[in-house]
Every structure is written in C-alpha cells, then in structure tokens.
Image (cartoon, rainbow, N blue to C red; front, side):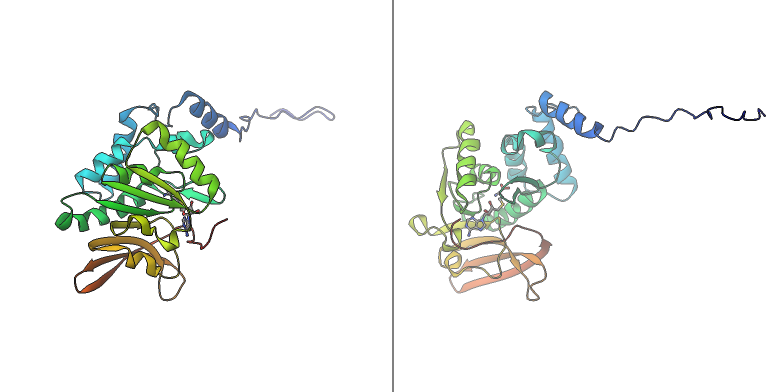
Length: 259
Ligand code: SAH
C-alpha cells in the first residue's frame, strides 16, 4: 500500500455527476417532440388505447365509455409544459388552483352515469349538465355520449380556455356557460344526466329540481363527518329520489358565486 506523502493531494474516485435537472430536461424535450415517456406520439391513437387498456385493467367495462375515452385527445387540454404526462392517470394543474380530473375518475363517473342510462335513454346520456367545465376535457368525453352537453364554469379564464381547447374538436353539441353551477342551468332543464367535477357540502337543491324523472346525477359530496368526499349517485323516479353512496374521491371544492 502506498503511504500518502505529506502534502500530496489524496486521490478521489471519480463520481458520477449529479444531474437533478435531467428529468426536467427530458420532460421538456419530450414535450417539444410531442411524445410521452413511453415514446408514443401524443397525436397517435396508440397512446390513448394504452391509457384505455390501463383503465380496463382497473375495472372500466362500458364499451361506449371506452370508445369515447379513446377518441378524445387529452393532451389538447393540458399546458404545453405538461403534455407529456397527458395520458398518465393523474390530475394535472390547469391554472387558478384547479385541475383536470384523472382519466380513471372521469371514466368511473361517466360509467356510473351510463349505467343509469341503460334503461331510459337507450345507451345515451341524453340532455346532460356538467358543473365545472375546467379545461373542457370531460365535456368532450360527455359530448360523445350525449345528445347535448351544457357545461358551466364559474371562473371566466377557464371558461374562455375551454372554449379555445374545444374549438378544434368541432364538437357541436357542447354549450359552454359562464355562471354559478350551483344553480344548475334552468333554460335547458330537465337533464337526463347531471355530473359535477367539484365537491360541496351537500347536493344543491337546484340540481335535484332540474334532474328529469328517469334521470341520474353523479357528484362528489362531503360525507356526514365532513372529513372526506364520496361519490354519490342519485336517481329520480316517479316516486322521488333514490341515493347511493360509492367510493371516496378527491375533487376541488364546489364554490358558490362567480369570481
Ligand atoms: N371537468 C374538468 C375538471 C375541472 S375541475 C375536467 O375535465 O377535468 C372543477 C371545476 O369546477 C373548476 O374549474 C372550478 O372552477 C369549477 N367549479 C367549482 N364550483 C363551481 C360552480 N359553483 N359552478 C361552476 N363551476 C364550478
């Protein structure tokens, strides 16, 4: 063994250079090249098929919901810096503290709505009302399954952004409304299907009043303890309303009024 000579510089093994910024640089490159981490192009049908395959593995069964989810390009609805994550099962920020919902949650809620549609509107959501347009993604999925979708948003910049995002899709049966969705949208009521993308303390009376007989509503609502949100399904029959409670979820808050 060599004895270190006084004053000699100790030998240091070369260590790999840390590049904490590398994943970010890779993401930026992927975004610029419009590919996902899987290498699939964002405009390819393959990338959406892969997303739907994962939703199926997680329990999605409804063929029409599968078709609708495999047709809507989710990357069109997210920020340029995040497009390479558009087909991951994750919610992503869309500005103003709001998020685009996870594909699995969109699929689950629409599948619940469709299960109600079986008996009444012959596999269509009929006249649908969405509360919380956000970036417009879910409205685009709903539009493929409905006669008409009225979608309400209380934040003007998001309402405008959704209009911009949806324009190239030429989905003519979507009407975007800037307003307080807690009041529903009386001019086009009653609705065969009502879906909320924001969770409140209770279901607003206006939604129940605007639900058609034979119609179904799906929404996140705080449970009795107020500590968590659960998905609630309400069916309206000739006799009144029946309500069932499903799994815990996590949605942005339902707020009243306009900002
Ligand atoms: N549908 C979107 C999710 C949007 S997040 C998607 O496709 O991913 C929920 C949205 O609900 C937010 O944009 C929020 O501003 C909106 N929101 C909350 N309370 C509302 C209300 N009372 N009326 C209308 N929109 C509301």
